[in-house]
Image 1 (cartoon, rainbow, N blue to C red):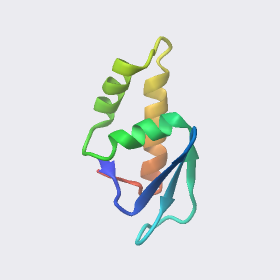
Image 2: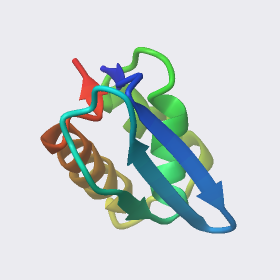
Image 3: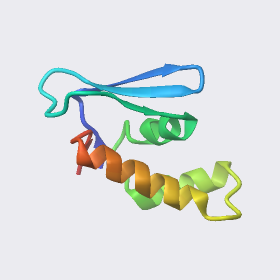
Length: 86
């Protein structure tokens, strides 16, 4: 999966905004925190959800399994608006 080219990422401080442009079939914005930004960085290239989780676990402490929950929630949300190409 990969970020759809019709979506623009804008980062300001700790807030991340995903904005549709061009031919995107979604009108609105998706706002999130730094976790969204990290996941979006991985989605700039073709990658699986499992690879994102694995890479994030190498960088961040995940004692309570939050990384997998966050990645699943964000990927589901992005897919729902067409921001991810499978």
